[in-house]
Length: 178
Image (tube, rainbow, N blue to C red; front, side, top):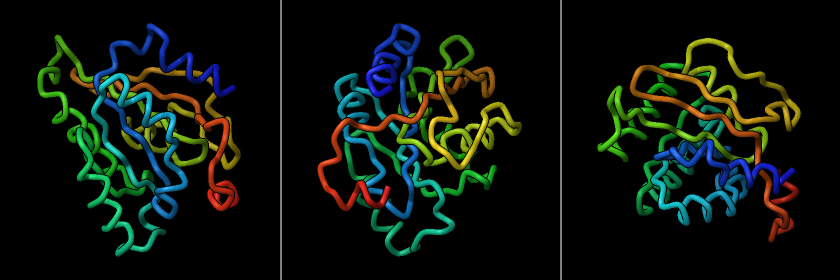
């Protein structure tokens, strides 16, 4: 499954992506960030918005520290939200568009790839962005099985990817937390 998802990232259908939104579980930001996705993003030189999702159930002080650390990375913006809070979620496309100011028009829409590990709330995030249920959600991994595209408005398109785990989790404690 991992290689299928990796091929999907490299597939010609996502070559037009200008930026990424990477949902990370706010209570486990280090453990829930897939290092392979980060490597692919850097290799493709794509800026991103790192979304600390489920921030409503995370420690606010620790979340603020993570926001500062992530936001200081090159070509990265960081925001803490709960994907169930639609108004907060709708700030993310503007952050992504600001990273690619040469796009943001009807002729050159911003294409935002939503990707991360399973069960960090990617589909809930997309449903909140669009204001309607277009992506199936569930408590178990692998509910999203294939890539899907959704038009947010005339200037923004979001692309939902299945959850992507890396082949070897280096720290046993990270694997236990996930």
